[in-house]
Length: 102
Image 1: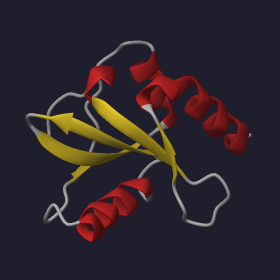
Image 2: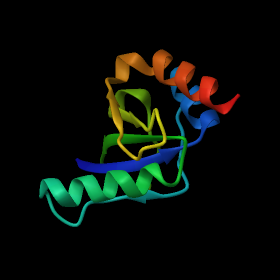
Image 3: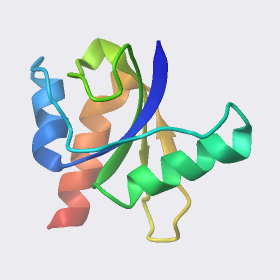
């Protein structure tokens, strides 16, 4: 298993919530297991989507299912600080993304 970070679109996030499998355009992988390198990969993913997701998958370019998601991360106030959400909170993440998009 490999931990990768994905920048997800609203449509990809909604697809995961609906139980669909997605294949994101790009996955960001940490250069090491060092906490700072992991954070750098997460922040890079956040720059490429409305939500960043940490996922555990066998193939960094492979399909992703909701069961693969370890956490969601969202910049709630534009500060660059990412709030952490558990996978079970996907409905709250979707609400926040839709609220900020309108």
